[in-house]
Amino acid sequence: MTDPFDAPLEDLSAAEPLDLSGPLTPSGNLRRRQAISRFVGAVQTASAVLAVAVLGIVIYSVAARGASVLSFSFLTQDPPAFVGLPGGGIAPAIVGTAVIVALATAIAMPIGILTALYMTEFAGRWQARALRLALDLLNGLPTIVVGLFVFGLLVVGHHQSGFAGAFALAIIMLPLIARATQEVLLLVPTGLREAADALGVSRWRTVFGVVLPTARGGILTATVLAVARAAGETAPLVLVSSIYANKVAINPFGHQGLPNIPVYIFTASEEADRYGFARAWGAAFVLLMFILLVSLASRAIDRRTTLSR
Image 1 (cartoon, helix red, strand yellow):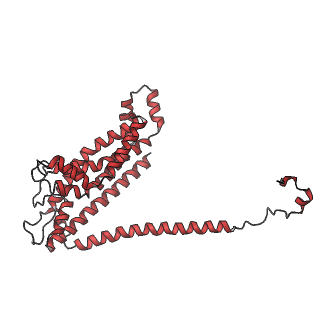
Image 2 (cartoon, rainbow, N blue to C red):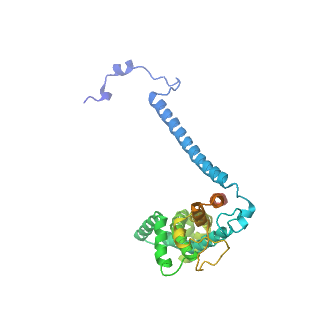
Image 3 (cartoon, rainbow, N blue to C red):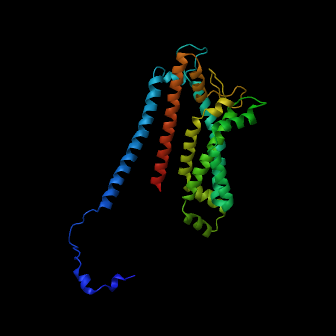
């Protein structure tokens, strides 16, 4: 093989000199890359617009179908005692949903946070991997399977109850809170832990006095998002707390279960009652607005926490 550096000097001097002062012109390869970049950007923008448009269509459709019943009294009144009567509201379903979701949060939040702390601060490499895998599998588990599990555990041989519904929702919330909290804890600067170790602070005091306060905003955001996810779950509640009541109840251990919005929507939409069908659309709009407001609140909390850092 001939080395190009061994070429005669007269051949090199005969080559066309490079004009360093000339203008830069894009090559064919550069133009192709720019065209691909513009195309991908247009596709991404169109996808984002489509996603927002779908959300807008869903909100408009639900609001339009439930507009005939939407009012302040719809949120504060009890539903009619008999099928086929106009008027009424969904106050028992709203109160029951609030009780069930609050109890589920009280169960899932401490367990999820402690699980995340163990994975990030105390567990070994293999233990952390095993726990992450278990949480990911639990997060991907169909909610109807969770409902069947709780039905066999707490309902068969006993009775339906709000606690059974809260327990099922807590199982759904647990992996969301644990995995999101773990990611937030991993963002805490290592220097804070090292500074506490240098001062001779015990490990548990470092965790509860330094790590948790630093990640407080992110943990709260993860919990709020888990609440938004659990509030709209229907399948587990249909199995373990499927009561249609026209009176407000707050006892989660009652023998009749607690009324809730998802079950009310399912029940009212299956009845041959045009008034109940309209109330089902109104309840769907209330639930949709609750989930939207909770999601916006979580974004605001996350933004405030980021700015405070």
